[in-house]
Image 1: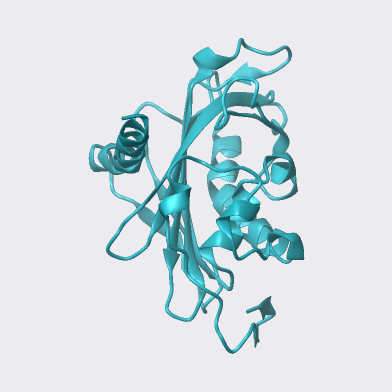
Image 2: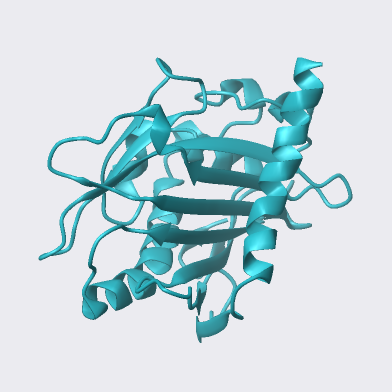
Length: 244
């Protein structure tokens, strides 16, 4: 029964972002990748919010499992997540709970959130979704930072036939308090581009080049039943400066 309940939560986690997207305005593409490995970016207005939702998408020369290894290495978030000052895996609360603090861009103060995460996989094409959302009741507000009332983050890892993975990174955050227009515009423009660029660079570290889910830093419920794409059997080759 516990396993069934966990899987139901995973399905619900996959549905929530789609339901939210259906009730808001259409995505507008602001950047189109010019070649494979280049990043495309979209934004979407959120009624009543100065900060738009944003989405970035890029093909990466890494498997789903390798990308999951980086996503599960919580302490290293400041190395690649846009403006991340601190990230901590709060296993003292629960296995999937993470505290994250985002550096403010002057004159805006730091923001933070306490989050939960669920992972799920579509059986027909092997696409994996990692859905993260704020659950601020888990931790009292911290000193010298503003707690974000809302945070919805989604990574979608779609396997490609040659061993690459199409990575979609989508976020909506209600930062709480006043955010100047120029700061909101800067975040919307740079966050998906910088995050995906830095994640790709971060993945060059061989410690993430794993081939067994049991090597992941931590295991979310349901991952033991998933099937992952494999590296190109010809080995990794060079493609426009990317390790493939």
